[in-house]
Amino acid sequence: MESSHVAVVIPSYNSGTDLLDCIQSLYNQEYQDWHAFIIDGASPDIETQRILEHISEKRATVIREPCKRGLAAARNTGFQASESPLILSLDADDILLPRFLTETVSILDSMPEIDCVFTIFEVFGIRTGIMRLGPPTRERMRTHQCIPATGVLMRREVWGKVGGYCEDKIFQLGNEDWDFWIRAMEAGCKPYEIEKPLYRYRTSPNSLCTKAFYVEHETRQQLIERHPFFFANRSVTRQLLADGYALSSDASLMRGEKVRAIRMAFREICLRPISTKSWRRLLRILCPDFFVKTVKRLKLAYAIYTPRGK
Image 1 (cartoon, rainbow, N blue to C red):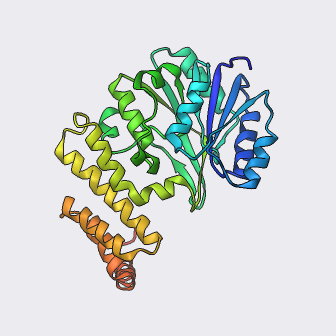
Image 2 (tube, one colour):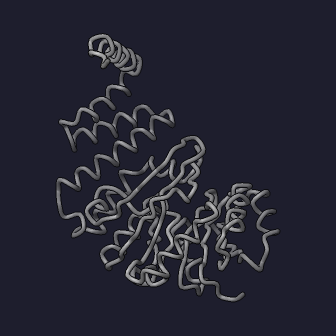
Image 3 (tube, rainbow, N blue to C red):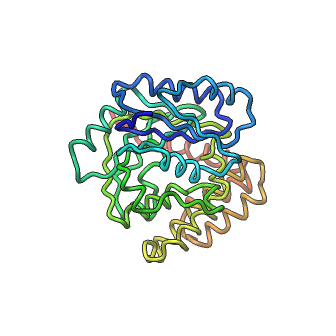
């Protein structure tokens, strides 16, 4: 295998036909100086194994791991296997639009002061729309993951400086990417966002992102403990944890675990007791029918008594 200018690292576990769509989007790129590394975490799915067996060795290397070790370990394996100066982490169920590599590679090749680049996301699946995480700043990184987990083209040195993705067990549940980008920021990484939707991000009930929200409060607590100086502001830390409990509460409710959802919502309120949004979440869980009827009545009253413009 000749070293390409861009290595594309694709962690895969029971990805099935989504992996085919992902790889086809690479073949559809205007920019073709790439080589893919597909890291399979011992997928038991027969369809996934059949697809992996038929992938062209000229454009992709399949690395089969003995067991499922999580996204962080899979990405580290792919990064270690590649020799390319630029590396893209790509989720196996996502899709690159044809000009993604053309525009991201152009930024890094023409702007040596930039260390990584990503684009706006086009979301599809169970949710649709446009998702923008940036602008990527240190201040925003303290409360929001403003550099995405996937779809970021980075210089190889970025991964090397921070020592790769953290493979601790807690981050197998999620937010290993947030931890990575915090360490990159602390090491002086300069990100760049292209304000075009060139990355298609798939949402599904079984996606890792959906599952990660269930334990979001735990992984955020781990972020705070690992980066005490980065999260030195107590009010920011409380906001970060409160948002984590809110996500965990919503995820619990989606699973039908009402008691856990209530417990997460109460903990959110303890962190921000004057937030009307937090109290509305708890009310919606405790009295869903009453909450819905009240909101409808308020909307109707607002419509009746609000003057209309001419």
